[in-house]
Amino acid sequence: MKKILLSLTILGTALYSCTPKIGSIINVSEVERIETVLSADDMKGRQLFTPELDKAADFIAAEFQKSGLEFFGGNDSYMQSFDMLQASPSTINGSLDQEALSTSNVTVNSTSESVEVKSLTDYELVKVAKDANFNQLVFPVLRADKNVVVLIDPAHAANFARLGRIAGRAKFPTEYSQVFIMTDNLDPKSLALTAKNTVTKQPLKNVVGVIPGKSRKDEYVVFGGHYDHIGIGRPDAKQDSIYNGANDNAAGTTAVMMLGKYFNELKDNERTLIFVAFTAEESGGFGSTYFSKQLDPDKVVAMFNIEMIGTDSKWGPNSAYITGFEKSSMGEILQKNLVGSKFHFEPDPYPKQNLFYRSDNRTLAELGVPAHTISTSKMEEAPNDEPNYHKASDEIGTLDMDNMTEVIKAIALSSKTIISGKDTPSRVEKLD
Ligand SMILES: [Zn+2]
Image (cartoon, rainbow, N blue to C red; front, side, top):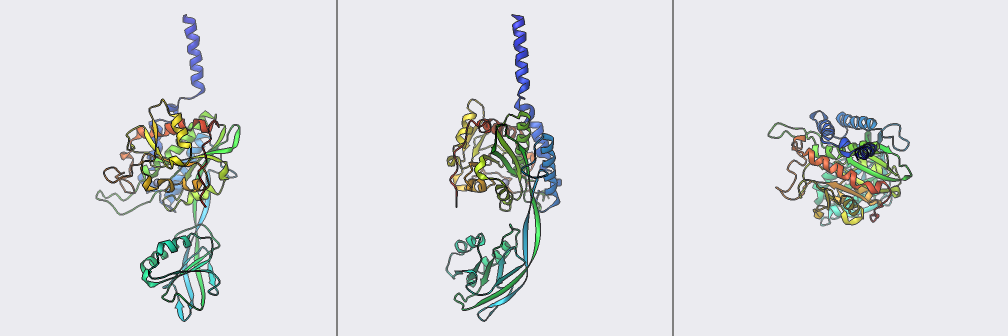
């Protein structure tokens, strides 16, 4: 009897050591170590185009390397670098009928050094009359892949000034330009305009690591979260001006890094796993937009976007929600894989907030990928909100490290059948 027991114990130990226990890899001390570095004051709020954001990227890459992840695609490092372009107007010359055009009544949205409109029929023409809906007419034009001239009645002067600030932001290189002219002459006979811009490159980077699949290498499961935040602001009552972004989104980034480490120790994924720390979420999702163009979205079978998981959800500890739950079967698969555990995923309880379209899952979801955000962030009115959201007080001390660790473990466990190829979530409806 004793002998049998002993051999059973040995067998048990052998099985046990083959599959490392999840808590030995994803645990509070590791989660806290990474979260502490990312949300420290010396990261100065991880703002775009700052050396501190690069420092955060270097830290993430070093951790990916320690975990043994491979580079993505043909990259020669973990950095997925790209350039945004920022154009500032130097000169504008021209005329609309007899009216002289200059930087005071014209805004050009472009990434070209020189923009020339030779006639009224050269570009598509849009008119924004005094009583027209400015936002409805103008914002689609700003995003359009075509050359457009927009004539805007001076009644919209305040919005016109806003356009100048938007046009001055960094954007993806484009061959198209949009010219906005404030004038009360909405039926002109002639137009000629030349604009010169000073264009500067603004480099950005995502950090991407990969664990190739054992058998289904061409089927990808993506784990992502943004690592940028909003930098330094006005000092608060405590004289704190650094927006640490501990919850938003050092927490999600920590999860991505921990999951990379965990799955690379398991090394039993049939599908290829991609781990990505996105840049520039806070300024419009540039990082995830770029990433979604570097792979075939039809090959992405699931995307976990992890955003603000550092606090307890509205249901208390051991729970989180999934945005866009009804848009694919992914949420049901994750729920099924947690049956019998203490953790539960719920559908997003804040549908009016439109969260599905407000984070880095959006670009892949629009391309048909079951791409959902997992979060614990409370989005109701105070006191049922996140009191530190986009404030200097979003600091590590306000996070529940134990619960955050449980959220990360739940993501790992619930994704098991997707990673193994047993389950494939249904696709999200593509947007045009
Ligand atoms: Zn965020």
